[in-house]
Image (cartoon, rainbow, N blue to C red; front, side, top):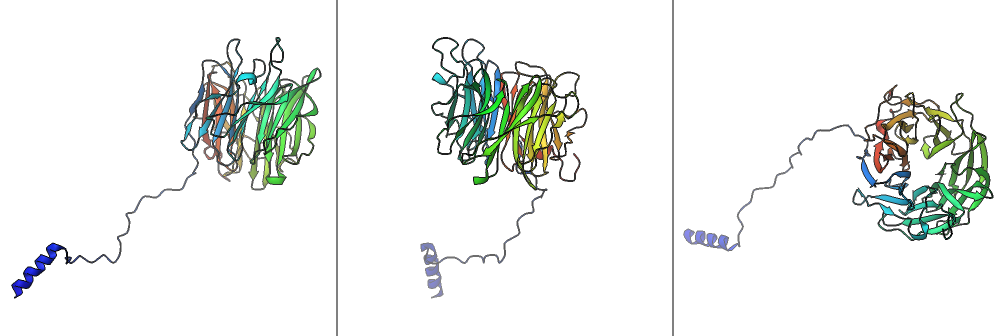
Length: 449
């Protein structure tokens, strides 16, 4: 009988009706293996250098913009034709979804060709991700049949893959010196326009709904070579646009400071600023390569404009620590540290981690159409102090950015970011772009460089 039951149990086991006993589950899981720990570092790190535009002819104008919150960039350049053809306006856009630069595209097509006598371009990015580019077309009736001078604009909503048909937004305006783009899509551009026998400062606005307004000519005589910058500060109904543009009279430089509410249609407030030199003999008649920065300190909003002297090569900064209500006197960022040469550009950024300004400047013998040795250096300062410390001491230490022969440099920075995007003309014919972690250059609060 016992043998019979044993045989039946084996048969049921083979048929799957009875499961063999299993080992009991452990009452507690083993602890995970210990991994080495390290001190937390900045989450934003600098990028490698990338060639975004490389052509057989020279690059003669450059501008850079970043998305106001996401921080991805777009770079615009005017490329010299080298012959009787018009110049070309080229753009390349970083595509954050695939983490690479798109192909360079020409946007000044058909009747909007930029011409050969005024080579200016400005680019900006709205909060919605639309990229806007403006350029001044400049061959006004040189020969019968030539199109009149004017300001043209185009835009892209797909990271520069396609561009809208250019539209002419202003007449008799040959140069765009600056562009500011609000988060909600309002555009404000600073222009040099014909006015009688001379030139005048003008402003043109595009509302957030896409409608361009007629240009506003301001009582501000300027030169055709005048340069400036525009900044937006504040948010919503309190947002303001502030601009700076340089001119000269009998060899003496001065600047126009202008401001207005970004929306609402209020009149422009215009003030002429005398530029007392920080030290005797440091300023000549022409100021150029103007850059602007809007930033937020722990104490509140601040604005800074930087520029360099076309003849002496010294670089300067003008700052408002209260969002544009009051301005200090120009302070000296730096001077060439060689017997010859000049600081071409001084791009100022703000590091929120250290609450310091950082200036990236190029020195000393470069320029457009030049391939001599010129590279990037840095200095830092506490906003409003007027004291700048060179990174690396005196002589300063060259930054390891890969720049060897710089012609021009431009920069852009998203709000509250420690990442600066830097673009420059390398060896006359290439546009190089990379990002730079400012925390590597500015010392921490209370620390030494």
